[in-house]
Image (cartoon, rainbow, N blue to C red; front, side, top):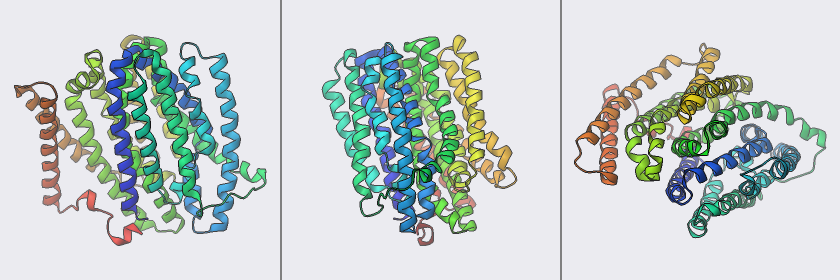
Length: 479
């Protein structure tokens, strides 16, 4: 399937994944309150750590390993079988450790954690890495969309009060497992499991573990923030931070959607030695990503104070204050994602990825430890900003002589300037509007789209730049 179609499926699924939490979040916030949201966020964050351990970096390593040998069916079957056997071992041990946590360590969150168990079980049958390595995105998108839609319906039907938080946990945990099981069907005829000697499976353990270090480091400064806020400042503060971070995390899905599609494509091109084609893809992707994330970052910052109380309720008004600075992490995430998925991982230079995210994790932990006691949830926001900035800076220090960072920074400066103009205009429109509520927010968003879109179109026309969204759609870049 072409890159364009894969991108459409993956971005479409990410769009759905963005919208779905935005549909259920206001209902949940009003139903269970700040402490309920904070308690669930705390339990889910710990559960997610176990899921990451269970997958052990396969979402990067597995995709690359499959993409590089997908044209050789015999090698494909053997590689898939060896990796899955390793996955069963690691995920099985992790599942046992999860039960240990639930029954012997968990306290207030024990009931919720118990009903999140199927998230750890799902690691045994998660084959997204194989499907993406084979350049197959359609079944992942369609089947998971259906399962998550069903889960959202169940939330509205059965979650009625704070006492029903366990139902909310059970619904989403079951949806994760069912989504993974449904995608197993798509592997039929494309890959076959054939038992291989266990020592062959263990050969994949070390490179997976190396990538897992970086995955765990990312989790430390994206998920452990919530654990630290809960432990230091209380679950109410974590509830405010959770709803602010949720919007940013959802929007970052667009970034990862493009990177997810491009990583197996570039890994395959790397295997075939298509250096010039890879260079074009990197430039086009960076231009597109920075155009997109600048619009999102400055746009969210412009309307966050109005959006949060409207969307989550007045009790979450402070989430808007947290959301505005947190939005600018999107620019850093986008920049680093292009380098990671189209340079570092396809070239098997995993140590660069590991060093950059580990540096970010260290900065985040230090900043959180110093700032959360005094600034509470805002301290976690500052820590996240510093961590996300550290990642692309470390990548630059290592790769500055190999990549056209001058052009990358030019893209960032241009779209950042457009975003700043948009922010000023949107805030000005908001101050002048005689109306309040959703109509005023809609007018501000429309004004932002017109200003940013207009500036981009004028820039592209005056410079003769090909529109980013149309780049790479020619036949030769699709195949």
